[in-house]
Image (cartoon, rainbow, N blue to C red; front, side, top):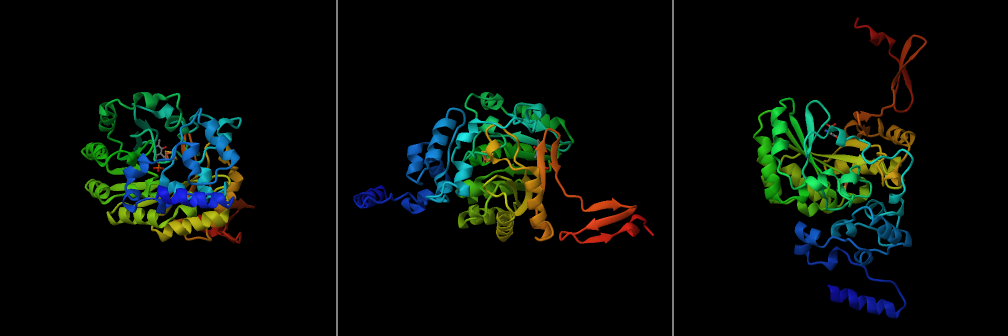
Length: 388
Ligand SMILES: *Cc1c(COP(=O)(O)O)cnc(C)c1O
Ligand code: SF4
């Protein structure tokens, strides 16, 4: 394959023409479909990226400057989804570093969501009464530029988690064992599926042995960024520990590929419900049309839209921020126009938990109670106030 590229380059260069880029077809398909091969061949340098896409000057600067602060890695698979020429391609914007990562808007923070305030052990974040996060990995197959936990998945200077990543899980499991109110454990990080099946099974098996833990959830972007990871073996292991749920992270309809659909289908066939948590990102999905195709596309692969996060004011992520009003307008364009179960809840993740941002469909006017539908038509439902 390398030979093929070289030959082609020579041909085109002699014409003074462009470059032949790598594609999925540049690889032996057995290698391509092997998730470990994908990770071993991840793109981490300007030179690597140039083999795939026509990097713009801005992108090159982004890679070279943000590198001082944030790590960068992209799977060949996710790279293969990029438009080769367009730097505004929604996949490129999510995965190629941007110079703006080094400048923050006024009130952005390292941890606006307060994960660190609620960290009870090395890995357990306990914020809500009945459910906890268990941080099981400090990295991902693709390091998304908009990551809400950018501080701990990416900061090369090291964070609490990076330093303690090697600690045993004993304290974390004891914490969950000692808190009977915890019935829902959400494995995240980083991406839990970056771990081997064996390492993952040790954690899940232990959690399943705790009687009060009912639901085990996995938060993973692998269906989107490394669908090859969703193997039969992984699913066979997971189904032994049901109820297992998986939440993933599609942000744009271009991510709904045959491979991604196949990965989700496989999870679903093993009885693992797949839901989606998107982030509202400027220039990527901050308009009704894109969001509509995204949620329709998700229903088409039987993945249920769950949350649409307002982009957190996280250091290094400010250039993706939209205003709350823009977010609410997008929701207005979906609610009622699209089927109810395809419309995600629009939420802001805060130190107080996730808070839904919803338009008020009910109001009081001159002692009457008025409700409004999605087309702004109104109904007087004052009679409904009484039960007679
Ligand atoms: C998001 C989150 C959860 C899970 O919240 P759900 O609304 O149940 O999906 C649990 N704990 C923490 C700390 C979270 O950030
Ligand atoms: S997959 Fe999730 S945790 Fe990992 S970098 Fe992307 S947004 Fe962050």
